[in-house]
Image 1 (cartoon, rainbow, N blue to C red):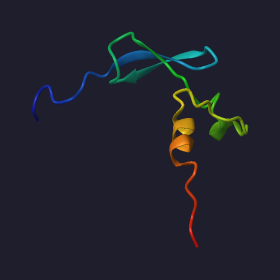
Image 2: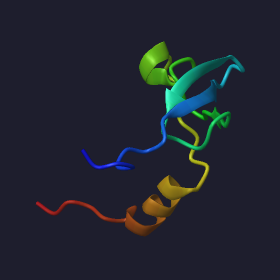
Image 3: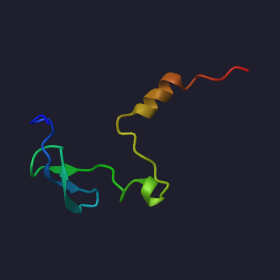
Length: 75
């Protein structure tokens, strides 16, 4: 087996949207880094069952509607 073919696997801290944290092993970042989640099972409607809407922070939906809003299907 070749040496140095696998990425570094180390401990990081994951911080959830509600502020809770847990330690896990990952190849992300470096030893001791903190991964702060923006969406997680405690906040996302797919897991919580809420019908809350996701915020369109970058304006992509508005940009799409502005560009293609006038299109209709012809019969």
